[in-house]
Amino acid sequence: MSKQLTVFGSFFEDLCGRGPYLPKPGETLIGSKFTYGPGGKGSNQAVAAKRAGADVTMITKIGKDPYGDLMLAFYKEEKIHSDYVFVDHDNPTGIALILVDENTAENAILVAPGACHNITPEDMEKAKEQIMKSDLLITQLEVNMDATFQAIKTAHENNVKVILNPAPAVKLSNDIYKMIDYITPNETEAEILTGHKTDTITNIRKAASWLYDKGVSNVIITLGKEGVYIRNNEFDEIVPSFKVKAVDTTGAGDAFNGCLAVALLEGKNLWQAARFANAGAALSVTKIGTAPSMAYRRQIDELIE
Image (cartoon, rainbow, N blue to C red; front, side, top):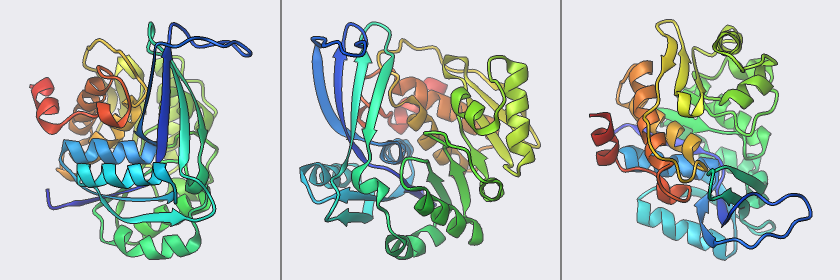
């Protein structure tokens, strides 16, 4: 694919333990398995998009440490462009501590962002050219907000389409919504952003309308195994999910966003793009881990067919 996707966001090294249930506060639990590998919402979305067929450049920041080295080696292997991976000499590479219940696939995550929360105005000035020449920018809310705002503003001012995955969710100012072309919260995030409950389809519609009225032309609310609700000037409906056996749901949202970006770059309409993204998300939950669980294009096409 000749079109360029730029992902601006987080890289964390995922340290993941699995056990019979999630421990209660103060409890020590003997787990069954420990794994580590590349993670962070931004990075996971870059991997998902690359494997699904996009030409991907990642903008992020790492520490000068072994976890940062692992990340660069991984990007080289995945063929993700890392010219705009900045190195912080004062802060460590971000870490995500993940606990997974091996019976329900539920998880609990603690993130220590490290270098990712220190992306400077100088870094953003260097990355500006890359954002300007992109066809699509995808970003999240896991790095410092001023840098995220600058990335969105640069894209918007240069007619580059923007996908915002508002995770972890925080209240946003109204001027940000006007610069976003696609927003992809899950039910919890949509509730935080809008103040509307998302416990019924009627309330989900109200939350989506709130975002649409703020100026976001395409609202996509992910509903887990129920699929996704989409709203724009053409669609107002649920796109159903693909039924699979979930073993680890940790990276499903990231798989969805990365694949959504690929489908949009290929000119698919919102319904087709959401269905393609649903397929990528479904495949990701059938494997353990985040980035390693992202599906390849052939697998996505096979599931859709």
